[in-house]
Amino acid sequence: MNMKIAVIGAGISGLAAGRELVKAGHEVVVFEKSGGYGGRLATRYAGKGNEQKLDHGVPYFTATSDEFKELVAELTSKGILSTWSGTFVHRNESGEISEVTPDSEYYFAKEGMNSIGKYIGRNLDIRLNEKVGGLTHIGENRRKKKSWMLNFPTALTESADAVVISAPARQAYALLNTTIDEIETLKMVREIDEVEYESQFTLLTGYSGVQMPDWNALECDDDIIEWISNESTKRESGKNTLVIHTTSEFAKMNMNSDRQKVEDLIADRLITILGGWAGLPEWQQLHFWRYSRVKNPLPHDFMEIRGNDTPLALVGGYINGNTVESAYLSGLKLGKHWAEQFAD
View 1 (tube, one colour):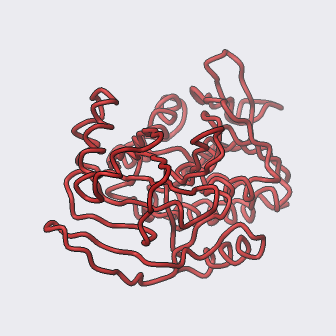
View 2 (cartoon, helix red, strand yellow):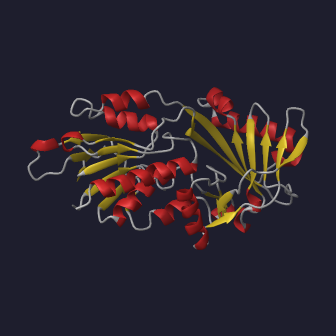
């Protein structure tokens, strides 16, 4: 049977689920509250004329499972992915620098990490800047209506036979609570309520007339800065740019601070680590990731409710891991499972 399936959130897990379900012949509509998709596979256009592309979310990822390696091979064959070859270094608390050899290949998208989401979702009906405010279950008494109604702050609604929530756990929790008196979601709500996230700031900086470092990235043992990505090593459009990723502890302490103060604190530490030139960027931008990394992922591939004509599932980066790969596998496995369950 062909179904209309709503996916809430256009991160890689939701897009992976949607892609599998479209392959199986279902109608899929993806609702994304922001203006872009891919989640933390994000790219910012910055600098003069917004000509430079910087990955201000996930700087790279690795692949271990056969399923994810298959996606990596597909994206590589399409010219989307490339291996991030070069030098990676580590700075200890004493300021000593040593070279690090990665355990596996680092992959990045040559045109920006957001191009991955664009490719995976290319055959999906994706509606950006559409925030779902709640869910209403129509249920077995619906006659010819669909099982679910999605409610939007604009008072508009959209119906669907099934719903996939691929938003962060906190947002999924809020959506599930709008249905808690109508269907048996209490167990699911209690479980995802235990999920905790680390936050993070990223500072994007662009320079002119300086000699950039010869390393791809610098990992730091530091209270403020955790990782510095030399975007100049990824693509020509990222020339003379860095993305500085802070520690979660720093982000937690400063999440409500004045943003200029946050930028100044990061810049001061950047000077200590790299030298005075790093504190004189031509431009800089700050971004805050409230849901950067999950601390205690749930031990499932996905979660679902199937009783009383109420197909609803949760997928995402907080399920069975906290990596790009685990998020993709969560959506992929749910998509394949539902494609089989809802087959004619």
